[in-house]
Length: 244
Image 1 (spheres, rainbow, N blue to C red):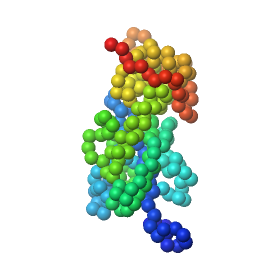
Image 2: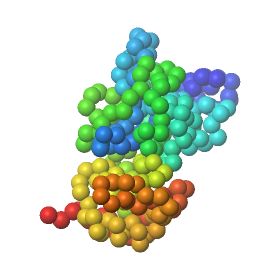
Image 3: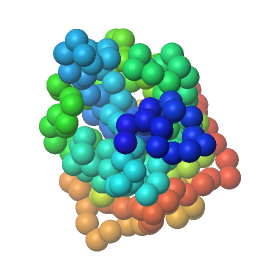
Image 4: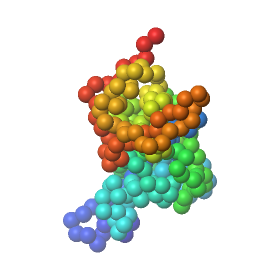
């Protein structure tokens, strides 16, 4: 049944909105926060041909038991990866956001180590690549209202980074404390004070040491992993900026 076909269901309107799920997939590459975008097909029959967009698509009522299930399915189709962290940001809808008709979308953001996925265009995508996040978006026009959606996802991510362990989900399973601090700084867009950072992270039990070290310069660096990958840990206070 198409999203607008409701004639065989008494009591329902004959026209119903398109319902989609979109995912802002964040990673850290080249010391920058980046977002994964897909290029729409260059066909005249497609909305916004050739423009870049957040990965996503229509809900499949036979395959998706929930909005989150749809988001995880789209993530797997577009990247072949399972994100260690996924969160719903919000919902948007209007008759103007999609030229095909009244539509609503439910936006999620996902965090994953950027080097854990292979960039292979999925169905209905001409290309896929990472884009550096500049401010609250990317340099370039996005399809539909995805510039607004991306800005909302970036704002949510940066706000939660101030008091949670979220940046650890952007790292490989094993990392050093300097790696983790740098991930915070990249997402926040500012330095954080080293000693306060380490005290906060270790006291909150965010990470646990493993029986391995990484050779860095003259002294080996202790490797850590997340104490729990099921959900983020919350801090009682936000991180302090680095003092001059």
